Length: 272
Ligand code: NAP
Ligand code: COA
Image (cartoon, rainbow, N blue to C red; front, side, top):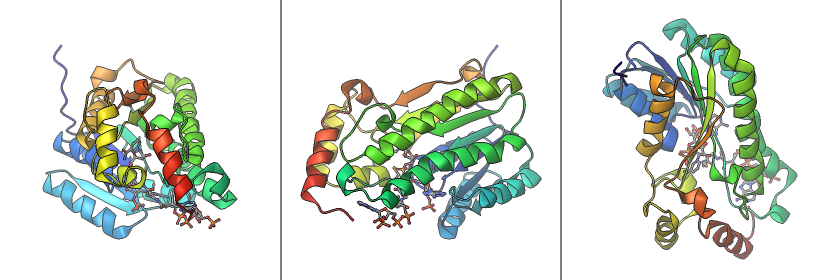
Protein backbone atom coordinates (compact mmCIF):
# COMPACT_ATOMS: atom_id res chain seq x y z
CA UNK A 1 0.00 0.00 0.00
CA UNK A 2 1.39 3.42 -0.94
CA UNK A 3 1.29 5.76 2.04
CA UNK A 4 0.28 9.33 1.41
CA UNK A 5 1.36 12.52 3.09
CA UNK A 6 -1.81 14.19 1.86
CA UNK A 7 -3.65 15.58 4.88
CA UNK A 8 -6.68 16.81 2.91
CA UNK A 9 -9.78 16.69 5.11
CA UNK A 10 -7.66 16.37 8.28
CA UNK A 11 -7.68 18.91 11.09
CA UNK A 12 -4.39 20.05 12.63
CA UNK A 13 -4.33 22.29 15.73
CA UNK A 14 -1.02 23.92 16.70
CA UNK A 15 -0.94 25.54 20.13
CA UNK A 16 1.82 28.17 20.24
CA UNK A 17 1.80 27.96 16.45
CA UNK A 18 2.31 31.63 15.62
CA UNK A 19 6.09 31.88 15.36
CA UNK A 20 9.30 29.94 14.98
CA UNK A 21 9.33 26.17 14.92
CA UNK A 22 5.64 25.69 15.68
CA UNK A 23 4.59 28.08 12.93
CA UNK A 24 6.86 26.15 10.55
CA UNK A 25 5.03 22.96 11.57
CA UNK A 26 1.61 24.63 11.03
CA UNK A 27 2.72 25.81 7.57
CA UNK A 28 3.89 22.32 6.59
CA UNK A 29 0.52 20.82 7.55
CA UNK A 30 -1.18 23.58 5.53
CA UNK A 31 1.02 22.84 2.49
CA UNK A 32 0.04 19.18 2.82
CA UNK A 33 -3.68 19.92 2.69
CA UNK A 34 -4.81 20.04 6.33
CA UNK A 35 -7.24 22.50 7.84
CA UNK A 36 -5.11 24.30 10.40
CA UNK A 37 -5.91 26.19 13.62
CA UNK A 38 -3.28 28.06 15.62
CA UNK A 39 -3.35 29.74 19.03
CA UNK A 40 -1.11 31.98 21.12
CA UNK A 41 -1.27 35.03 23.40
CA UNK A 42 -0.96 37.82 20.84
CA UNK A 43 -3.79 38.65 18.44
CA UNK A 44 -1.46 40.17 15.82
CA UNK A 45 0.68 37.01 15.68
CA UNK A 46 -2.45 34.88 15.35
CA UNK A 47 -3.81 37.09 12.55
CA UNK A 48 -0.50 37.14 10.68
CA UNK A 49 -0.15 33.36 10.86
CA UNK A 50 -3.74 32.68 9.78
CA UNK A 51 -3.23 34.99 6.78
CA UNK A 52 -0.07 33.08 5.81
CA UNK A 53 -1.77 29.69 6.19
CA UNK A 54 -4.62 30.89 3.96
CA UNK A 55 -2.06 32.13 1.43
CA UNK A 56 -0.69 28.59 1.40
CA UNK A 57 -4.17 27.39 0.42
CA UNK A 58 -5.38 26.11 3.79
CA UNK A 59 -8.71 26.56 5.48
CA UNK A 60 -7.26 28.25 8.57
CA UNK A 61 -8.38 29.89 11.77
CA UNK A 62 -6.90 31.01 15.07
CA UNK A 63 -7.70 32.15 18.56
CA UNK A 64 -5.99 33.97 21.38
CA UNK A 65 -5.30 32.06 24.58
CA UNK A 66 -2.60 31.81 27.20
CA UNK A 67 -1.88 28.14 27.93
CA UNK A 68 -1.73 29.05 31.62
CA UNK A 69 -5.51 29.62 31.47
CA UNK A 70 -7.44 26.38 31.01
CA UNK A 71 -10.81 28.06 30.44
CA UNK A 72 -9.49 30.31 27.67
CA UNK A 73 -8.02 27.27 25.93
CA UNK A 74 -11.25 25.30 26.29
CA UNK A 75 -13.29 28.18 24.86
CA UNK A 76 -10.94 28.63 21.88
CA UNK A 77 -10.78 24.91 21.11
CA UNK A 78 -14.57 24.74 21.21
CA UNK A 79 -14.71 27.32 18.38
CA UNK A 80 -12.23 25.26 16.35
CA UNK A 81 -14.27 22.10 16.91
CA UNK A 82 -17.50 23.83 15.88
CA UNK A 83 -15.94 24.90 12.57
CA UNK A 84 -13.59 22.03 11.69
CA UNK A 85 -14.86 18.99 13.65
CA UNK A 86 -12.72 16.40 15.45
CA UNK A 87 -8.98 17.00 15.64
CA UNK A 88 -6.70 14.54 13.78
CA UNK A 89 -3.45 16.21 14.85
CA UNK A 90 -2.58 18.40 17.82
CA UNK A 91 0.85 19.94 18.27
CA UNK A 92 1.46 21.52 21.68
CA UNK A 93 4.52 23.80 21.63
CA UNK A 94 4.00 26.96 23.66
CA UNK A 95 7.07 27.60 25.81
CA UNK A 96 9.10 30.27 27.54
CA UNK A 97 12.83 30.40 28.14
CA UNK A 98 15.58 32.68 29.40
CA UNK A 99 19.04 31.75 30.67
CA UNK A 100 19.48 32.27 34.43
CA UNK A 101 21.51 30.39 37.01
CA UNK A 102 19.49 28.54 39.65
CA UNK A 103 20.68 30.92 42.38
CA UNK A 104 19.38 33.87 40.35
CA UNK A 105 15.91 32.41 39.70
CA UNK A 106 13.15 33.91 41.81
CA UNK A 107 10.25 31.67 42.79
CA UNK A 108 8.15 33.49 40.24
CA UNK A 109 10.76 33.08 37.48
CA UNK A 110 10.81 29.30 38.01
CA UNK A 111 7.01 29.26 38.21
CA UNK A 112 6.56 31.25 34.99
CA UNK A 113 8.41 28.67 32.88
CA UNK A 114 6.88 25.67 34.66
CA UNK A 115 3.45 27.29 34.25
CA UNK A 116 3.86 27.81 30.51
CA UNK A 117 5.76 24.66 29.52
CA UNK A 118 4.52 22.02 31.97
CA UNK A 119 1.20 23.19 33.39
CA UNK A 120 0.40 24.63 29.96
CA UNK A 121 0.98 21.24 28.33
CA UNK A 122 -1.31 19.60 30.90
CA UNK A 123 -3.98 22.23 30.13
CA UNK A 124 -3.66 21.63 26.38
CA UNK A 125 -3.94 17.85 26.84
CA UNK A 126 -6.97 18.23 29.10
CA UNK A 127 -8.73 20.68 26.79
CA UNK A 128 -8.14 18.76 23.53
CA UNK A 129 -9.15 15.28 24.70
CA UNK A 130 -12.93 15.66 24.20
CA UNK A 131 -12.31 16.89 20.63
CA UNK A 132 -9.77 14.28 19.46
CA UNK A 133 -10.63 11.83 16.70
CA UNK A 134 -10.89 8.46 18.44
CA UNK A 135 -9.42 6.25 17.15
CA UNK A 136 -6.79 7.92 15.01
CA UNK A 137 -5.59 11.18 16.55
CA UNK A 138 -1.88 11.97 16.80
CA UNK A 139 -0.75 14.31 19.59
CA UNK A 140 2.75 15.78 19.47
CA UNK A 141 4.35 17.65 22.38
CA UNK A 142 7.30 19.85 21.50
CA UNK A 143 9.99 19.17 24.07
CA UNK A 144 13.67 20.20 24.25
CA UNK A 145 17.04 18.49 24.83
CA UNK A 146 17.02 20.07 28.32
CA UNK A 147 14.43 17.41 29.25
CA UNK A 148 17.19 14.81 29.42
CA UNK A 149 20.50 16.74 29.08
CA UNK A 150 21.15 18.85 32.19
CA UNK A 151 22.27 22.36 31.25
CA UNK A 152 23.58 25.22 33.38
CA UNK A 153 21.29 28.28 33.53
CA UNK A 154 18.38 26.10 32.40
CA UNK A 155 17.16 24.47 35.62
CA UNK A 156 13.63 25.80 35.12
CA UNK A 157 13.48 24.57 31.50
CA UNK A 158 15.13 21.21 32.32
CA UNK A 159 12.55 20.56 35.06
CA UNK A 160 9.58 21.70 32.97
CA UNK A 161 10.46 19.87 29.75
CA UNK A 162 11.29 16.64 31.63
CA UNK A 163 7.75 16.89 32.95
CA UNK A 164 6.40 17.43 29.44
CA UNK A 165 8.04 14.18 28.29
CA UNK A 166 6.52 12.30 31.22
CA UNK A 167 3.11 13.69 30.25
CA UNK A 168 3.74 12.26 26.77
CA UNK A 169 4.73 8.84 28.09
CA UNK A 170 1.92 8.59 30.62
CA UNK A 171 -0.77 9.68 28.16
CA UNK A 172 0.53 7.15 25.64
CA UNK A 173 -0.45 4.54 28.24
CA UNK A 174 -3.79 6.08 29.19
CA UNK A 175 -4.98 7.12 25.72
CA UNK A 176 -3.70 4.14 23.75
CA UNK A 177 -6.91 2.21 24.30
CA UNK A 178 -8.85 5.02 22.62
CA UNK A 179 -6.52 4.82 19.59
CA UNK A 180 -4.81 8.13 20.36
CA UNK A 181 -1.03 8.28 19.91
CA UNK A 182 1.07 10.73 21.95
CA UNK A 183 4.72 11.50 21.18
CA UNK A 184 7.31 14.16 21.98
CA UNK A 185 9.45 15.76 19.29
CA UNK A 186 12.69 17.28 20.57
CA UNK A 187 14.09 19.98 18.30
CA UNK A 188 17.83 20.60 18.39
CA UNK A 189 19.24 24.09 17.79
CA UNK A 190 16.93 25.60 15.17
CA UNK A 191 18.24 28.57 13.20
CA UNK A 192 16.45 31.92 13.19
CA UNK A 193 14.19 31.17 16.16
CA UNK A 194 13.44 33.01 19.40
CA UNK A 195 14.80 30.06 21.37
CA UNK A 196 18.18 30.31 19.61
CA UNK A 197 18.21 34.11 19.93
CA UNK A 198 17.81 33.78 23.70
CA UNK A 199 20.37 31.02 24.24
CA UNK A 200 22.87 31.77 21.46
CA UNK A 201 22.61 35.52 20.88
CA UNK A 202 25.62 36.09 18.63
CA UNK A 203 27.06 34.70 15.43
CA UNK A 204 30.17 33.20 17.07
CA UNK A 205 28.06 31.14 19.44
CA UNK A 206 25.76 30.04 16.65
CA UNK A 207 28.84 28.84 14.71
CA UNK A 208 30.12 27.00 17.80
CA UNK A 209 26.75 25.32 18.21
CA UNK A 210 26.58 24.37 14.52
CA UNK A 211 30.05 22.79 14.77
CA UNK A 212 28.93 20.75 17.80
CA UNK A 213 26.02 19.20 15.88
CA UNK A 214 27.18 15.85 14.41
CA UNK A 215 25.45 16.68 11.13
CA UNK A 216 27.39 19.96 11.08
CA UNK A 217 24.59 22.49 10.78
CA UNK A 218 21.75 24.16 12.65
CA UNK A 219 18.26 22.80 11.98
CA UNK A 220 15.27 24.47 10.34
CA UNK A 221 11.60 24.54 11.36
CA UNK A 222 11.00 22.39 8.27
CA UNK A 223 13.33 19.68 9.61
CA UNK A 224 11.09 19.48 12.69
CA UNK A 225 7.86 19.80 10.70
CA UNK A 226 8.77 16.86 8.44
CA UNK A 227 9.03 14.58 11.49
CA UNK A 228 5.63 15.84 12.69
CA UNK A 229 4.19 14.91 9.27
CA UNK A 230 5.67 11.42 9.69
CA UNK A 231 4.24 10.98 13.20
CA UNK A 232 0.81 12.29 12.17
CA UNK A 233 0.63 10.13 9.04
CA UNK A 234 0.06 6.41 8.69
CA UNK A 235 3.86 6.04 8.60
CA UNK A 236 3.73 6.55 12.37
CA UNK A 237 0.72 4.33 13.02
CA UNK A 238 2.46 2.10 15.61
CA UNK A 239 4.53 4.85 17.26
CA UNK A 240 3.42 6.16 20.64
CA UNK A 241 5.15 7.27 23.83
CA UNK A 242 8.41 8.06 22.04
CA UNK A 243 10.68 10.99 22.75
CA UNK A 244 12.09 11.69 19.30
CA UNK A 245 15.05 14.05 18.92
CA UNK A 246 15.22 15.97 15.64
CA UNK A 247 18.58 17.50 16.38
CA UNK A 248 21.21 16.31 13.89
CA UNK A 249 22.63 14.16 16.71
CA UNK A 250 23.26 17.15 19.03
CA UNK A 251 21.92 15.47 22.16
CA UNK A 252 24.18 12.43 21.54
CA UNK A 253 26.99 14.95 21.93
CA UNK A 254 25.49 16.30 25.21
CA UNK A 255 24.63 19.45 23.22
CA UNK A 256 28.31 20.30 22.69
CA UNK A 257 29.58 23.09 24.95
CA UNK A 258 26.15 24.69 25.41
CA UNK A 259 25.93 24.05 29.15
CA UNK A 260 29.31 25.60 29.95
CA UNK A 261 28.70 28.49 27.54
CA UNK A 262 25.31 29.29 29.12
CA UNK A 263 26.68 28.90 32.65
CA UNK A 264 29.57 31.29 31.98
CA UNK A 265 27.39 33.81 30.13
CA UNK A 266 24.77 33.83 32.88
CA UNK A 267 27.46 34.24 35.56
CA UNK A 268 28.74 37.35 33.75
CA UNK A 269 25.28 38.89 33.34
CA UNK A 270 23.12 40.04 36.25
CA UNK A 271 19.71 38.32 36.20
CA UNK A 272 16.54 40.08 35.01
P1 NAP B 1 8.84 31.00 19.76
O1 NAP B 1 8.98 31.52 18.38
O2 NAP B 1 8.96 31.95 20.91
O3 NAP B 1 7.46 30.20 19.83
C1 NAP B 1 6.68 30.11 20.99
C2 NAP B 1 5.23 30.14 20.57
O4 NAP B 1 4.42 29.93 21.72
C3 NAP B 1 4.79 31.48 19.99
O5 NAP B 1 3.78 31.24 19.04
C4 NAP B 1 4.23 32.23 21.21
O6 NAP B 1 3.29 33.21 20.74
C5 NAP B 1 3.58 31.06 21.93
N1 NAP B 1 3.48 31.24 23.39
C6 NAP B 1 4.46 31.58 24.27
N2 NAP B 1 3.97 31.62 25.51
C7 NAP B 1 2.65 31.28 25.42
C8 NAP B 1 1.61 31.13 26.37
N3 NAP B 1 1.82 31.37 27.67
N4 NAP B 1 0.39 30.75 25.93
C9 NAP B 1 0.15 30.52 24.61
N5 NAP B 1 1.10 30.65 23.67
C10 NAP B 1 2.33 31.03 24.08
O7 NAP B 1 9.89 29.83 20.08
P2 NAP B 1 10.73 28.71 19.28
O8 NAP B 1 12.15 28.98 19.56
O9 NAP B 1 10.28 28.54 17.88
O10 NAP B 1 10.33 27.40 20.14
C11 NAP B 1 9.16 26.64 19.85
C12 NAP B 1 9.16 25.35 20.64
O11 NAP B 1 10.33 24.58 20.33
C13 NAP B 1 9.17 25.53 22.15
O12 NAP B 1 8.38 24.52 22.75
C14 NAP B 1 10.63 25.32 22.52
O13 NAP B 1 10.80 24.90 23.86
C15 NAP B 1 11.04 24.24 21.53
N6 NAP B 1 12.47 24.21 21.23
C16 NAP B 1 13.04 25.22 20.54
C17 NAP B 1 14.39 25.14 20.19
C18 NAP B 1 15.04 26.21 19.33
O14 NAP B 1 16.17 26.04 18.87
N7 NAP B 1 14.38 27.34 19.09
C19 NAP B 1 15.15 24.03 20.60
C20 NAP B 1 14.54 23.02 21.34
C21 NAP B 1 13.19 23.12 21.65
P3 NAP B 1 2.80 34.46 21.64
O15 NAP B 1 4.01 35.26 21.97
O16 NAP B 1 1.79 35.17 20.79
O17 NAP B 1 2.15 33.86 22.84
N1 COA C 1 16.51 36.06 34.29
C1 COA C 1 15.94 35.84 35.51
N2 COA C 1 14.62 36.02 35.74
C2 COA C 1 13.86 36.38 34.70
C3 COA C 1 14.37 36.61 33.41
C4 COA C 1 15.77 36.43 33.22
N3 COA C 1 16.36 36.64 32.03
N4 COA C 1 13.34 36.97 32.59
C5 COA C 1 12.22 36.95 33.34
N5 COA C 1 12.53 36.61 34.61
C6 COA C 1 11.63 36.55 35.76
C7 COA C 1 10.96 37.89 36.05
O1 COA C 1 11.84 38.77 36.74
C8 COA C 1 9.76 37.44 36.88
O2 COA C 1 10.14 37.14 38.18
P1 COA C 1 9.87 38.20 39.42
O3 COA C 1 8.38 38.43 39.45
O4 COA C 1 10.40 37.51 40.62
O5 COA C 1 10.62 39.45 39.06
C9 COA C 1 9.38 36.11 36.24
O6 COA C 1 10.53 35.66 35.51
C10 COA C 1 8.21 36.23 35.28
O7 COA C 1 8.53 37.25 34.34
P2 COA C 1 7.40 37.95 33.47
O8 COA C 1 8.07 38.83 32.46
O9 COA C 1 6.36 38.58 34.35
O10 COA C 1 6.75 36.64 32.80
P3 COA C 1 5.71 36.49 31.66
O11 COA C 1 4.78 35.47 32.14
O12 COA C 1 5.19 37.79 31.15
O13 COA C 1 6.64 35.89 30.43
C11 COA C 1 8.64 34.65 29.98
C12 COA C 1 7.22 34.64 30.49
C13 COA C 1 9.53 35.32 31.04
C14 COA C 1 9.08 33.20 29.81
C15 COA C 1 8.80 35.45 28.66
O14 COA C 1 10.15 35.52 28.29
C16 COA C 1 7.98 34.87 27.51
O15 COA C 1 6.79 35.17 27.40
N6 COA C 1 8.59 34.04 26.60
C17 COA C 1 7.89 33.42 25.46
C18 COA C 1 8.80 33.33 24.25
C19 COA C 1 10.01 32.46 24.47
O16 COA C 1 10.57 32.40 25.56
N7 COA C 1 10.41 31.79 23.40
C20 COA C 1 11.48 30.84 23.42
C21 COA C 1 10.90 29.46 23.52
S1 COA C 1 12.21 28.29 23.70
